[in-house]
Length: 580
Image (cartoon, rainbow, N blue to C red; front, side, top):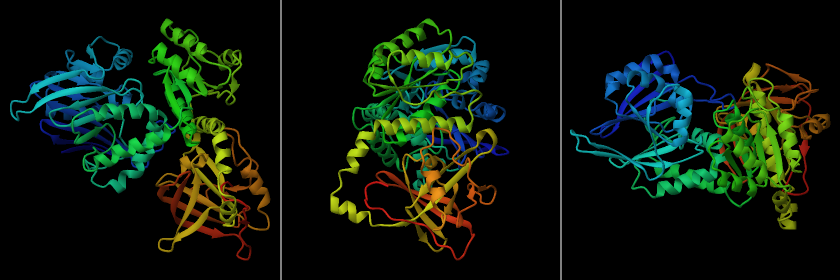
């Protein structure tokens, strides 16, 4: 059954005994937070489970208020809902909790202790609640029609991707409700993961953006999941439910998180939950650090207890902190004291504006850090207005620069590790010289970047296609996801040196890579065309293959032109094969 209102629609289907999902389909949403571009929309999934008593798991985004609440009433009288399980309190899942309390003031909200604290600040009214943690349970009793007993077991899953997250496992149906974890931003009428090839790129992109920076927390959650009876379905908060290829998706999380958590060296990126744009900006910084193959741990200064906070900060090789309220409450002030006491002089330290509306000046916070003789990881990241696409890009690039500092010794060792003869032989592979440009959004959401490329090859005739190898830590990589467009600018042999020198230089985070360069805007769909290029090709990313240190991008060529049919492409000849 579906109820449609334009490009917002609802889907209501049974998924197991006494269990129904209400999926809010947001077909045209193109951004999830300004820094997270979507290609296939998204969904917000809620679930209704009827035993002797009835539980609703999560709600929906407030934009669905006019259709979601009437559809819920068709399924059940809201006053008959005994329990609302809140997996976590981000507004896309909790946007209608206030409405539910209006309809049923006696409903009991079951959530983590942190989630209940967050909800108190969101709904601004008293409500019945019960805080739960790993090992706690909720028995809904036996459904009289099916004889199924619905007993829920809870698993704490902090930082996936908010500090308040819990998983809920129904022993009666074998369904694990995970909210954001294992999700993906992918909108379709398919209720389950029937076509893994179609959703795999979005599944990986979602992991890289939201779960990867919390890889250590992912592994802890997976350990807790391993202690459960057989799981037959993971009921996610975004995208299709995972059932037909469940083992594959879980092992992907295990493998990716294991790779990101190798070694003991990591950067601790601190944030203040539900304060300004702190959580989103911290995620952008953490994502950048991870792109450089450095380990990262997000740390909530509000929700982390003093002993754990001291250990996480003291053991980190780098620490990134936000500006905090000018007049922090006593509990937060204690956490700030713990943070400052745990810092030591061998660490890299960076600071960013939280843009919470009442921040302590960033220079004052930076001064406190410098007083303890820490090394500056990057220049203070100042956010002077509501964060834009460029701000998030600047944060991500600052994180990548820090990640490269942390992995510098490992990178140098790898460069020296190849056998001399093999290294020289591999270096004899030559390639053309190109500049890849990409642009997304417009106005305040504009993000664009560029890089020099030489590992480019034609890969297909029909359709015309090519491959490009893109290092994981390239800033432009975030703009070359499946479905994105970019431009391949072919450099000419006779005049490539100025462009090569310009795009090979190290840009500070957020710098305009096209300043001072002759570019032609609007010529190609994917990004700027360089006015001095020999030719350009407008391309659309079709597939991404993951290599050890590069992404192999296969793209279909959609348009192109040549400026000089008699000129030749510049060629790059290397002498070694284990670095550029």
